[in-house]
Length: 185
Image (tube, rainbow, N blue to C red):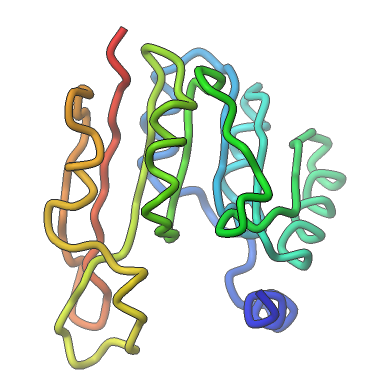
């Protein structure tokens, strides 16, 4: 966590544009309750809140949440921003509570069961997570935080897969798994 606080203090991973899948698929839903897990400075949470969503955003970095609070004030939106270490179980995902759960650039395998349970029937999970990749131009990453091929989609067996892509954008960019899954009614 200290590493992430340092990175955010240095301006790394500042607020940016939301992932295009968040923009595309949230627009197809009436604003409801959203959850942004490992939200960082909250680019998805802020974007959703600006569009009428009631968003809970969770991250273990105090600095990231401070940035999120500052942005909320500037934008005049409200997000339930929480400092919590997901790996230590400091945040509980309430069952059948969310219309949209967003997880980008974060992998905690034991959280998938709670994520699935936390989505209301008809709601969506939108996940974009890094994969194993043998590109020699990439910065090494701990393999525990990288998906194997097919692993993300396997978490949503029995769900309607609206988007399911595993791709590498370019040399020097890590391969990513993207899933948008709807919980069946």
